[in-house]
Length: 164
Image 1 (tube, one colour):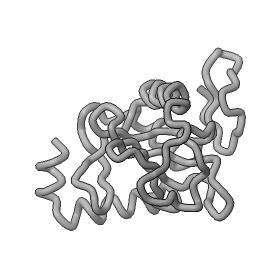
Image 2 (cartoon, helix red, strand yellow):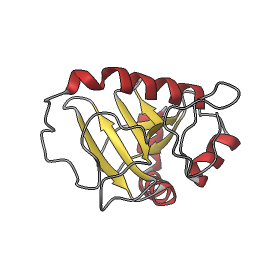
Image 3 (cartoon, helix red, strand yellow):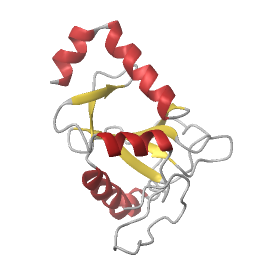
Image 4 (spheres, helix red, strand yellow):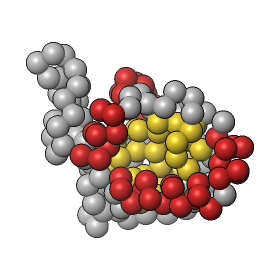
């Protein structure tokens, strides 16, 4: 996969047959430095007792394709709460790139490279199952990392207890 930042070729194939994905530099660098965290949790969201493992790039691509396949099943489904206006409607957008997961996709964190008007490219959004919703998490990758670290340092024992 070509991970050049800013590429908007959603779903096209590179010369080596790998999918092109738009990626912001920070997320691209994270995948280059560490292709996933295995089962170890690396991230946490404020207000959730859930930790997230960093997905290997191959798993992120697989999860993205899974989201694409199941999105038609959600036609007509409304979020229990109105969706944040910075997030485009629907259950799959070409620019949504999963990067972290809890419980095999029950909850996903995604970089949003196709935001709604008022959103920003690279914002972090989340898919949460039961109730199914897509919500806004952070304006960008660096801010998300900072917020996650704040949650971890506020109660490291809790993070270790729920994350491992």
